Structure formats: structure tokens, C-alpha cells
Length: 185
Image (cartoon, rainbow, N blue to C red; front, side, top):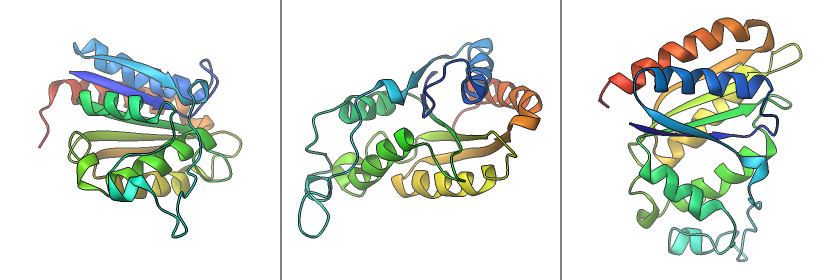
């Protein structure tokens, strides 16, 4: 099994990274392979809403005209067996880098040409809130809505707070082991 973890955090030693690394540790302990990609290090522009109606080739061809890392990362998701989306929570919502990526992916996935390799692919969401941690559940709802619109087979979306991060890391390791040893439904 091959997993791709897209992180909306720029801190490879932060709380979101710890949560993503816990899931990856569970996956690899059960024989799977995977990697974490930090989206702030990638070139991902926000949607330009190309035409007067706010659409473009995403609607007509299932692709985006912006020449950045979106297409390559989308292909890597298609090649993987599992896609994981991890984000720090900012103002009860996704990080800007994950939001920019998913906004464009979601638009492309509305076209039939972009659906193969995305629709039905197992996915997990992780939303890590610092501070008081109250925004995690709201962020999880937002992430779930976007991933379902894309057509992913959403296995779980976990809200995490800095206060329960150690316990959630244990849960994420268990989830990783389970995902690596369980066939999709």
C-alpha cells in the first residue's frame, strides 16, 4: 500500500506534523509506504476563476490552466492507495495552502475526466487546532464537505486539539495500521 499525506502546515516539527507522522508510523509499521508533502513548500496558486462565470478548463476539461504543482500532486494522489489531508486549524478552518489546493482540486473533480483515481479513493482528514482547540470540529466539517465533493471515500476526519494530541497520535497510529491491513470496502 502506498499513501500520500498532504500537509497544510509549514512546520515539520509542529503539532500537525506530529499527527501526520503518527498516522505514517502506523502505516509503515504494518508494511505500507508513504510520504508527507508540505504544501507551503509547493507552488500552489489560488483559483483564478478564469471566465466571467467564475469557471474555466476545470469545468470544461477537468484540468486547470495554472502551471504549478497542482497537476503533479493530483497525479500522485491518483497513484496512491490512500490520500491523507492534514491541516492546522486557523480561525476554525483549513490552512490557506490546503484550502488553495483543495479549492482547485474540487473544481477539477466535477468533470468526468478528473474523476478516475480520485472518486472512491480512501481518504483521511486530520484537523489540528492549537490554542483552545475549539475550531477543530468546525474545520473537520469543512474538510469533510470538500473531500466528499471531490468523490473521495472518506474513512475518517479527526479533529485534534493540542490538549489531546498525545492521545490522538496513538489513535492515528492505530488507524494507520488498520488502513494498511484492511482492503477498501
